[in-house]
Length: 114
Image (cartoon, rainbow, N blue to C red; front, side, top):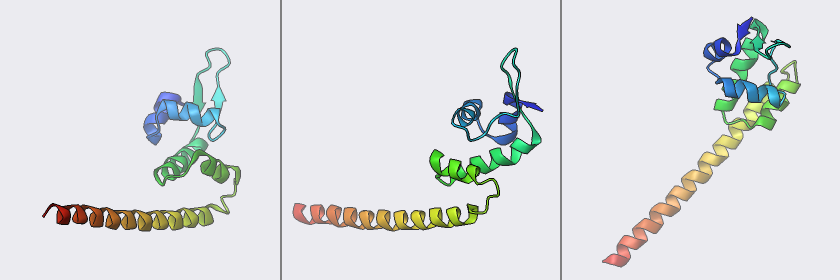
């Protein structure tokens, strides 16, 4: 068993994040000491914590992460990742279009100065 501070170092998630994930039902500690309320995590929590960290780095919302965690078989994980990839591609395209519009706008301002 790992204390929350040890588990935070091990997983790269902050203690605050781990507390929040427990609060919203994403990652419960394996044991909470009833006397001092210290939280303890086990090896089984390690994989889940790493998965949550990775999903967060991919821009998954808390609700999307809950969807992944609720499906304990992770059968839909690949599909969710592919959907996230498609949304990211769409966002990149939209940002590229906005950059082009911005460049045109900047250029038109320079032409009007002449």
